[in-house]
Image (tube, rainbow, N blue to C red; front, side):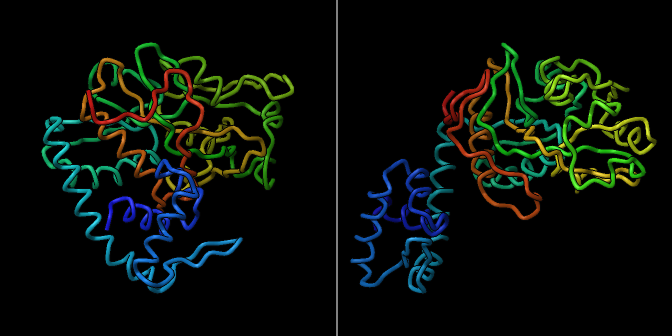
Length: 324
């Protein structure tokens, strides 16, 4: 069985969509269809049922997929380990995160990375939003997964990993707490709590806007240094704040109600690293982060993976390879 046939079969079995399979493999949908037809001719039976609305595996296709998956994983793991040994993916890698949602992705990636690169030790640590790039610039971490936007000349942004819509956090007794959703225009009648410290103005203005879409000023309240402090202040009735709607399972707090925001104000997470620090370890981990982010995880609430190939943001690189 040729490798192209193996990858086409397993990818199509995963996607159940010829167009998405073609995108992942970097070929045309017609080429994928041709490969599958050739493989079905060799097997002597259909492997997929195709209609105008859906693609599903036949029982024979399911059995072939299940039989081939372990061997495919062994081949890929062996090849990855050989590449790692040849390119020096050893030593220590320190990775930061600024959100519990990012930590969930890191933990999933860590398990795979340790299997593929057993000679590279990895540790993770939390990065405070009040000093978002300090640990990276000091060399305390080699890369981190954090919220965009990021526009720093000495730092590089990798491909976006996942995105979440926004929620407004209000005291449970607040008038807005009875609403099914809120508009950014409602912020003009509140006091918005935010993050202080050495936060870049462009980042702060995006996540905690100073004006509503119509131009009305949004009153500012206390700027906290640590995120838990913001939650306590909201619960105490000192103001309201904005957060990722998918963070509620991680940061639910008694006395705080989370209300979806009607407008699209996505919170997108991506890996960042120093431009002078793009080692083989960093690039290998970033690549695995992207692969892991595209793998569904039921423990992730509804945070959406970001499709590869989107428009780069300031400072964003193309998906990195393993080389220096």
